[in-house]
Image (cartoon, rainbow, N blue to C red):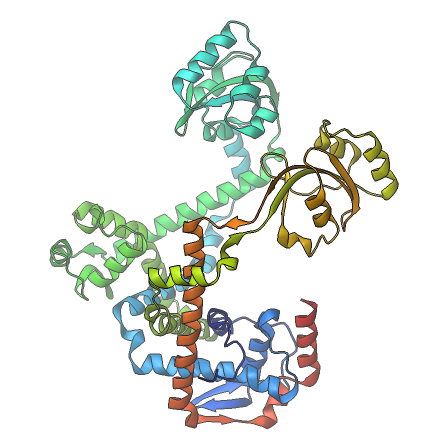
Length: 563
């Protein structure tokens, strides 16, 4: 079958992303006639401004290499196809399906609730300098202690280390040898200065922080599933200015939560929010319908909506699906805040503002596009295990781990320095320490301290890779000029190409076959849509050049080439 002409047909998922991104606002100059239609699909017009926004939002790798009217037509065709997809989704009633309808309802509530938060609640949650100072003093945050600690897996290990310390062992030596945190081990047990609040979050109780003397060793203290012993080695006093910014941020968040919680509870009381006993009985019997589970003045929360929220929160089989107290608590935590604030936003008329109306309309369209794609493509594609095994057998080269060489290296800034080092190095030195001391460039290393390269690195490193292949392990090689500098190397290990682990190969093969099947299915779907709705399309060529002038198209092509 011939592939449909257009912009992104080799990338159906990328097309979907591009289609839902046309809500983005470009800062580029608008067309001379932004509202003039460039096309009409049935009763829906596609404006010059919409087309330009879309062209600017498409990722460089996905833009057509064409220019002139052919490029304009490619961009436009994608928006036309968008309307075809929306048209079909509406005709089959996709938006009326309970899961889709409820998801749209929840997203609408969240959007309106956030507007209400910003406009009506957050201004009431301002934090002053007096608030910061009062909290700073009340919490005793002026007192900071320099903390050292050793974290181990069990309480018995911690107790044994404490006994050694009480007998005179070095805290720094034991921390370096035993603590489970490698960064803390490098610092010989030092965690840094902490105030009372930070210490508490780090597993140090207030009583220990307040009363334990300098250089004393704490008893084993729980920290998550592990244990640590703590020692303070220095105290200091700090001013509120040292913590003002972080305190202001934390207090503002707490104040916003407090203001919101009080406001939501007040609204729920005023609107007589309550659990409906018949709905609860139906929920406990496994029903899912539009029957009210909660009621309030002017509305209700249905069983279907509640179950959808349970599913989203992955709580479908817990007490929140059975026990009345748990149902009430779950709804108050997950449904009530957005519901009450969205209701207040509607009563304030925010939902009628043009920009809000536009956002909500676009959000509904995005959801329809995503669900439609899933139904038409994702749900229709399946790959069997025999197909996966056959694909791997036909293409063994695609499931082979390339040749790998791991090595130590020094990257000197110039050839002379590299030659001098090559004449003196034996390979037994600590090359990382040499690089750090001299300020040399260095590549990321594995946990074992080595740099590893694969055969595909021969492209960016055409001289280094063959030199590594020829090198004898544990002998100093180089210098070889690379883009980072002049490399000296000592090969530690070489691994020949080998088959990829079976589970990993099957996983990648499945993904490849799914993508290929999705592409075929997408092409078929798109061709059917164009045949079904193509006679309803009218294109206004004279407006296309205004929407996408030559200079703009040329800049998009240049951006693609540069990328």
